[in-house]
Amino acid sequence: MQTTERARPLRVGVAGLGRLGRRHALNLAYRVPGATLAAACSPLDDDLAWAREALPEARFYADYAALLADATIDAVWIVTPSALHAQQIVDALRAGKHVFCEKPLSLDVAECERVVEEARRHDSQQVTIGFMRRFDPSYRDAFAKLRAGAIGRPFLVRSQTCDLNDPGGFFVRFAPQSGGVFLDCTVHDIDVARWLLGKPRTTRVFASGTIALHEGLRAAGDVDNGVAICEFEGGALAMFYASRTMAHGNDTSSEVIGTAGALAIGHIPRASRVEIYDALGVRSECTPTFFDRFEEAFLIEAQAFVAAVRAREGVGVGGQNDEQPAGQGATLEDALEATRIGLALRESLHTGRAVLL
Image (cartoon, rainbow, N blue to C red; front, side, top):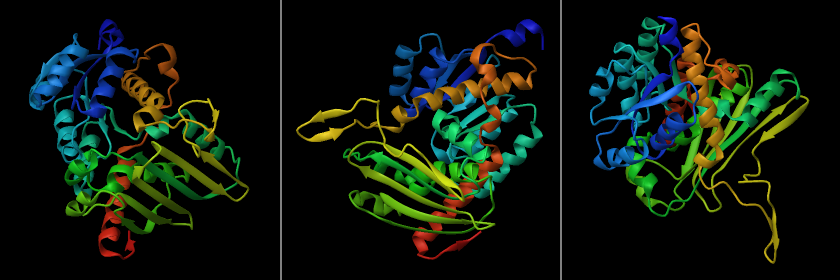
């Protein structure tokens, strides 16, 4: 690659322009040094109409194959339904593109394994799965403190992903494609727990759940509140809670307990450091959605992806990107394990029995 070619921005095409896809597209278009949003793809006319207004410099495609055929695109950013992820990653690798794909890697373990094998055949290309909590400054600080021995040997993680209740029923409509609450929500907590505990092997899981508000989930075999226990080799444990019904906003937090102390990340969800004192008492406002809670993490994650691609090419991208912790991101093997555990939790939910792994 010529020096001038290596120095130009990474040209990215986004596939999928739903709620999260639009956030990623705007970040790449306006907030990620070293990258440019060159193209956007969606089969939906409404999405493309939004893109033409919000992303005037991009080219637009209604077909994913046409996006991959664009020889000027260096990388694709996949934010499509979960069931499409595995094949779209494989197709992108075979088209010579670097790949960022939102979680989960797949809703099927065999498909995850197929992607891992395909990526090994294309080892000059970067593949990143979007477990953005690893890039959140608070989670990164906790990770560093654990590695420094701040709380002794960590042996228990308690982690939750709790979304603001949606009376409009988005999650009910999404349930047939989501893989269920444990693969859609708890998969983040699974990845965080393994990461913070040093990636121990999972031995047994148990899950239970209930439908508190959204009866429409029953047809998809899903619940709107679920709890789970995950046992690891060596005696470590993780406890998970997922909810679609929070009244106060997105409430995502984790706690790690060790032999010499404990640390907590995000126990009090807050949009800012402002506290309100009035006749109702003292309170702080909550982050309404996971977009708001992890806005900075999504941005750092994108910067880290660009840095990882450039590192493979032997060139930095300048500015703070060179300092992003690309090595802290989840590997494809991590994503495979998150899906394996998430599917085991779903099986346990449906059968009422513990599942051995």
